[in-house]
Amino acid sequence: MRHVTIYELIKKSLKIRKQIVQMIYKAKSGHIGGSLSSVDILVTLFYRIMNLDKGDESDKFVLSKGHSVEGYYAILADIGYLPEDELERYCQFGSILIGHPTNKVKGIEVNTGSLGHGLSVGAGMALAGKRKGKNYRVFVLMGDGELAEGSVWEAAMFAANYKLDNLVAIIDRNKLQISGGTEEVMKLEPLRQKWEAFGWKVFELDGHNYEELIEILTKIPVEKDKPHLIIANTTKGKGVSFIENKAQWHHKVPTEEEYIKAIQELDMQLQEVEERESKNCL
Image (cartoon, rainbow, N blue to C red; front, side, top):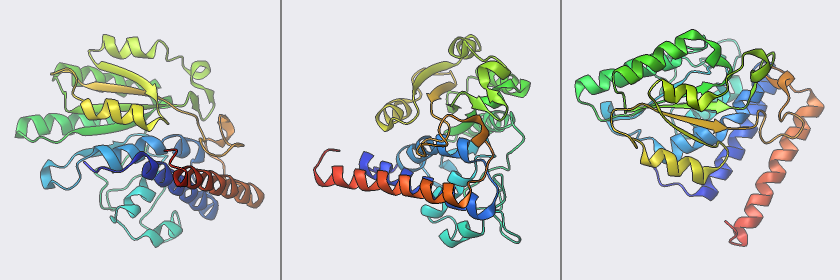
């Protein structure tokens, strides 16, 4: 576990949001809305929660919503798992950084992208850890849209049956998917009660609030023999005003004008954070 301050986490998230926008603009490809919504969850996991330096006892991470890979790549580059300049070649010919997680990249456990598969893989990893007597935890980040896949619920049932309290699933609950609102496309609510009925210990929090994320994630497992789920309420496109809460930005590339505006907005937020830091407001 790394002891990074809240202030440092905020600055990391802004840097990664800029890299997401830059990667997608340059590649002319990517899923910008869901990548931006999940940044604060990823930053909390990788810089504050997960143990990554314990060999085969290191915690595992599975990005089930594999299309939101840009922020994941940016973090892996930041912690030294791949050269940062490789991000500039994202989705370019010859680059190892394709549009979904690939285990050709150090730090990525499994290829993902077909929605609804990540939880099954994570449950298998967690069961293997139990049977081998390993102390690692498995974190799986899912999109809310992928909960329409039946395989998610098979994995949920499996994890409860095998009492996988070393498994932590997190739902990026931004309430939008490619074709509209989740409650319009395939109603998910009451989401908490559904997971509880499957035998999971469930928490619900603000997925952009570092204090809440850290508080819950550091005390898991709360209940022995139960898998844990966090419903993290987020904003799709978080951090860029004209992208936030708009389904059309699920998979859309900014124009040059939009790109410049997005970077200016993120730079302004970074400046505000640094001003607050100088006044000891954080």
